[in-house]
Image (cartoon, rainbow, N blue to C red; front, side):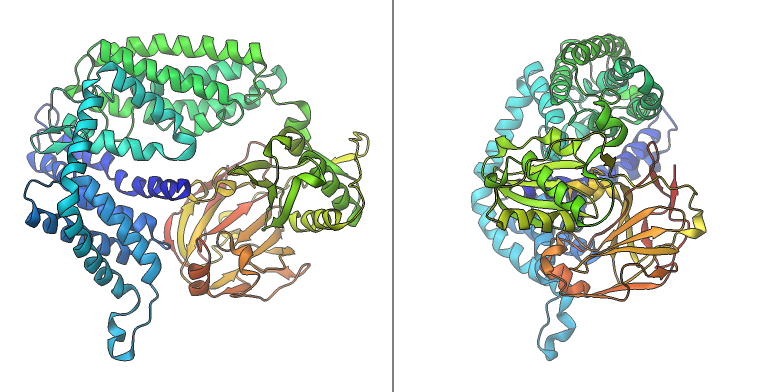
Length: 637
């Protein structure tokens, strides 16, 4: 259920993405700015039809491959649902919640029926054409049900909205706290949708954002308090982390944090800055959430109204000042909160020795000490396996061992016995606890050898050997840094499809860049080719992933689909083996995409650079639909 709500939260971001354009058109068209009525009307049209936009956007966002058929089904479902319920009870107004429900139903039905095969005489209506039909039929049934059960639900939602809005500063504070606290789970999008688009009503406009732009004098109180945090508080927190960093690392940390702090100030995009410390120091993140709540309360007490179409950055601050009350007080409040953030963050970091950027232990920062002795052969993997087994609580604590292309997938008996610090010290790039017994250890492309060695230790009757750290014999797991840049024409797209940022991949190991930076593709064809000239480093036994070492020294992992290791090679056919020299555009792999889409969570294919030098990142130069072999895709910054 948690995973399902995470998916909905991500799907909501697609329709929310239209808001900046709508807000820009609406504001610039007003008499106090450019005074262009048709421009204002264009922006107002988007706000006026947000419900059907949500139906379309959520359906596409939930669909396996982002196909437009899902969006059409979402629109049809919304029209059937809303008009059907009104025919039963004219007072029903499902509005944006109706759009979200329609989008969810359409997206799920698309994933179930997009490849359905009908009898030959009905063949025209098979496949994706069947999805709008089955969605319409399903929504007829739901319209009948909601026609009778929605009035009390609608009354409950209205009562909840009135309570939160009526709670004044308390309601604003609770919302601000939850808004920040839920970011690591992705569920903040769900609560944002209720506050921004559902609660409250003014001349037909619902939700805090819609009512603010419609001129509601009571709207904007639940948005204003974010401006001091995003424009001043978080950037000041970044300065505190720089000041608290170890002197020899301060310059390197400054280059990373100053850029994302300015992004927070200008645009209100805070996630890059928040993710830089939320996992390193959960205490700081809880304090950040509490300070956000305090800012919301103070802004409410000061009777400040302000709003945004995208986020609470400087762009929205100045653009929407004409609709705000007491906007300049937010600057004063922001300076105060900036000072509070700096002092509190710096004190807590120093007092509790929090491992914020630039303060990690020497072995974690400099070399990610590897558990294996130098040299090749099976011994090093056996040593890694023994070390990991110790860090996971011992042989008796491990119930089952499995792996995919980059991570160990384990079931353990007691999660408390796991030592995450030692796992990372011994080479693990990340540790993900999934539920009460499942844990994933991000190892890298050598994971299958480690997993096999762990299975042998697990199955043996002998006790697992105790391995002592020996700093004189340990070596880094990190491959030597690449020595040459990759020029735009030296990297080509390995498969036709839709390019997307790595951060949008619905798998934390990839989206949080635990394996490295890169991008992902929603493939439309099943042929995978080499993106570079180089040598095949790894062909996984399950054929779902291939590692390539480019001529410039970059390790590139192509991972076809998510969780496809469980397919055990079915649907995959490889044309290369380890050690083969390859040229860009050379065929590596054929994939039965229909089989993958039907039997795996997603066909999304991450392309990851697993050995980028410190301080380097992948910048996408192209997104959206592109053909196999396209150049000028990425730049290493």
